[in-house]
Length: 287
Image 1 (cartoon, rainbow, N blue to C red):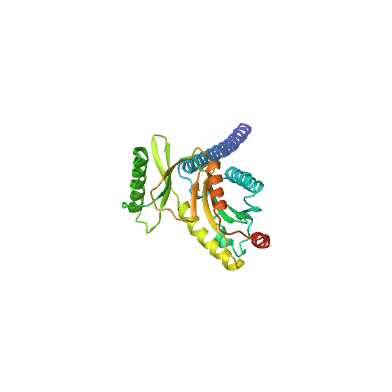
Image 2 (cartoon, rainbow, N blue to C red; image 1 turned 60 degrees about the vertical axis):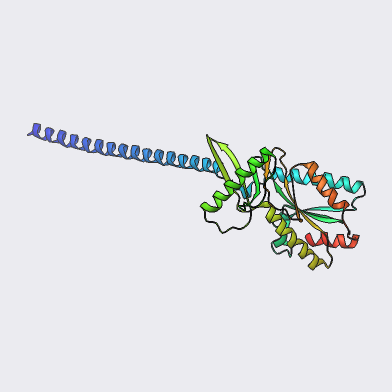
């Protein structure tokens, strides 16, 4: 009887040990499964993040390419140039206004927001659109085959390529856009990628310069010449200039010297200038 009782106790203990061991094994399996799932999730997240980073490197938004360095460099160059013209007596005063500081409710915000800087002098207003591009840039191309290209062999070849790429983009995506195209060429990983911008900087600058000049004349009761400048601050940019007809309101410059030349010619040839009172009132409107 005693032996039977002992055997029964042993069996019960063995069963209890087996149950405990099974539960421990189950918990261990669940822990390993959870760890594996967490590892898979983490790997998936890192892979997805790497893919997104690669896509950003290959396909970036060209409208956001103007960085703080380019803006600071442009402002410094503008200040240097205008200080020289002020010292030499070409102008009496100037003010460089960052449009990012304008309030949305500002009466001129709608016209000025397309630019990075509004430069006011007593002999003219310069609307500066800063670009800090370093890639090979096909600039201001349309799909109109009637426009002539340059006689230079290299320029003609680049313009032919630019026209062809613009035509292919225009036809493939069935776009209703009627203006010009600006896009960059990048060679990466044995491939050539063309990134198109959603707007043409030259056309946008010309359009908004006209509108800003009219708005200033209406709100200030006096007319002052406005010139739009698309300023490529990085001297290494390779601009393939399209053969499109240019408008009088806008110029493209890609160096500090060319920026100085355009500003100097505009100031020297100005037919009218603002009085001190008119100048101060105009600057006050932007502040």
